[in-house]
Length: 325
Image (tube, rainbow, N blue to C red; front, side, top):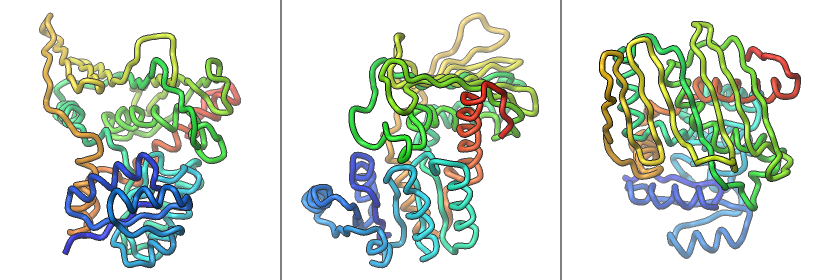
């Protein structure tokens, strides 16, 4: 039988997941409090919809995908986990560390699995970079630059600009993606210091439209984070690795990986393959539901580590001090 997977939140992300889950062989359903969103979902997918996520959970779904505002992740995830329903929750795991920890606690008590949706981890180009790091090709990794900067991409509507619902601005919307990649490259090390600065100058929002951060690990390596919804510079979506024996630049905008060897003057440029957005993640979810084993990507401990760095960055911005998560 095909897995029965429900989507909670039928906006852009929810619809995108629904398309790919259906293509991966899942039977889908949806839930949203907005009648227009429900009608559009029914028309597009000819699938059942509910006006309440509890009704969707009680309908017999095997798993749900959560794409509602960050502040609502906890209540939906906990309800599903307590009912034995598997969960994929879109990044970030929650809007605060304490909320993320409660999701973690519910997952530990549940017979179902819960994973966080960090879609860039599934990109073939990142998998190639990560494998080279694990194999020790670059020697000791000393520094990672993680940048997700838009030239002009401030969300014009929706909950992304609402601090109570989102928990932040550009950092939790787009910066979180490359922060997760940087921490994965370093195998999620212990963090002993975070210094951050956020700004809301260009868009004049209630959340930050740009931020920079410096993260120091207990092993001595560092991460430099840069993110912005709108910046007076060329757009940038990349991860740069500097090691004792070599390094690499991963350009996520065109999925190009450039390798620098300490003994060679010219870099080696490769394009390991193209990845269709969300497809590998949703295919992994369908396979995981069938096998009742969580995917390798999306571990909650790692998602919680990302959440702690983000909260420390915000605290550092507020206090002007280096913060230890």
